[in-house]
Length: 98
Image 1 (spheres, rainbow, N blue to C red):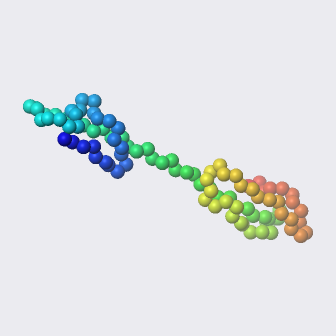
Image 2 (cartoon, rainbow, N blue to C red):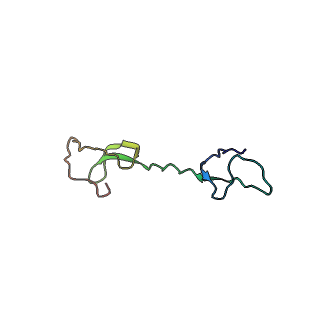
Image 3 (cartoon, rainbow, N blue to C red):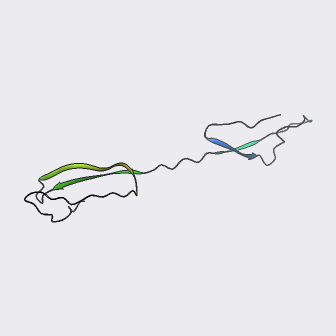
């Protein structure tokens, strides 16, 4: 009598093509009992990212320093930022590196 075993990272698939039965009687010669295992699939690694927002003037003066909008969020997740008003300034556009 033989039994299927467990191995970390692998799962039992089937008995080998020319394997003897898992249980039986001893006969003259050698019987080979073969258990076939496959490696467990690895869980896909979820990609993550960050989004920050910063408000500056055309000459680089910081009106509002960096604020986190999304931290360690799944890639593809939506985010929203907003145009703000600052006394003495008007919005002229997004920075070319934005």
